[in-house]
Length: 141
Image (cartoon, rainbow, N blue to C red; front, side, top):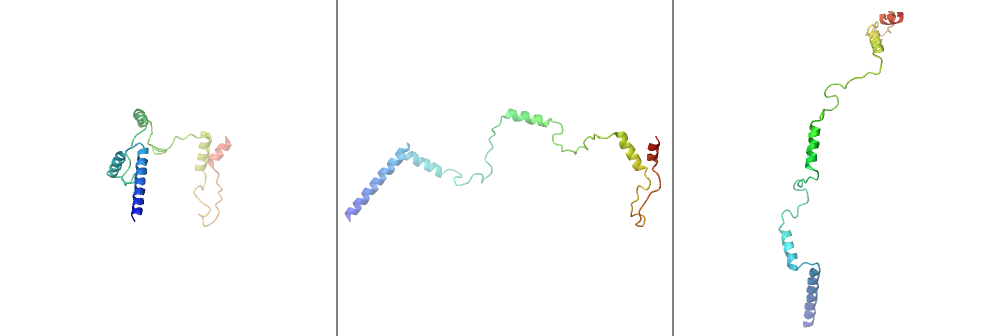
């Protein structure tokens, strides 16, 4: 029995020596490692995942002067916060001849029976026999 206890004690001694050498090989002493472990154990929020207590503090990587200049330029830009059409319609530029558009509008306005649909007279078709005065004057010119 004494032999087995002696062998067990020798094994523990070898284990202790190798453990001490393993800690020594990292370049830190046992006291430094223990102090680091105690500090980590007493650290606030050590078991809290990142972001679970709110956003991390913001650290800007941009130049503050450049950002200020960009903000001032944007603030002085015309129509910076205006969506298209919120200040009235966009300017209209026609691609057609204004005189031709005017002639077509006048002919449509002067057309006889212009507000009568085919179903408005007892389901009969409307066939106008009246001549359009605007078209007659345009043909006569």
